[in-house]
Amino acid sequence: MRSSLKFEIRESRKRKTMEIRIDRGGELVLYTPGFCLQKIEDFVREKKFWIYTKLAEKEILQQPIRKREFVDGEGFLYLGRSHRLRIADAEPDKLPLRLHQGWFVLDSKQLPHARECFVEWYTDHGMPWIKKRIRDLKNRIGVRPKSITVKDLGAKWGHCTPDGKLCFHWRTILLPPNIIEYVIVHEMTHLLYPNHDEAFWLRVGWVVPDFSGRKQWLAENGILADM
Image 1: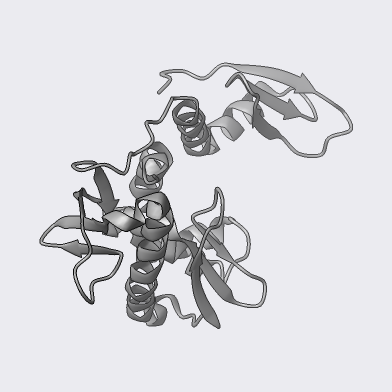
Image 2: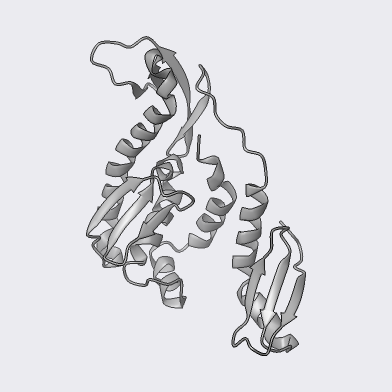
């Protein structure tokens, strides 16, 4: 994390508001309609948390991440904990992949489809876990989603549709429970406030007072929750 922030300032009279962007090299560019040092300092101070979060995300995304191998002893995450993999011959009436006594057990015949087995397992186990937490939170937040799905959302952890449906990435269930809760609260709050405005963050903070720490953890460590 950087101890100080340095900006390239680009002034344009055509602009009406200030904006901060991070270019491909990680350099900060501040676009402003006019140069007023005090206003710029106030704007940067207000956006400091967002800036550091985005810089952390960019630094981590640029680091090489070791892909997990589907071999005996490899660790796979579930609810923030790593469970080692054991590959074994299938037993009668057993699923292709199961969590047994702290170990993931994969049917040896399913090795060519190991990733698909994990994605299916995470999806199947993520849905009831997330649904239960939403039931626990719905009265506190004051919302009730029309539907809940767990699927691959690409780079997003969650998504709230304009018609009140919530979607969560299957990778969410790999995260620690308190981080999953932040993702859930974030998306549920979007049912009330579509944008990340002050009212949105006030409601998130009312439900999860330490949300900024959880948000920071997700920005710095979320990329590790994958296969």
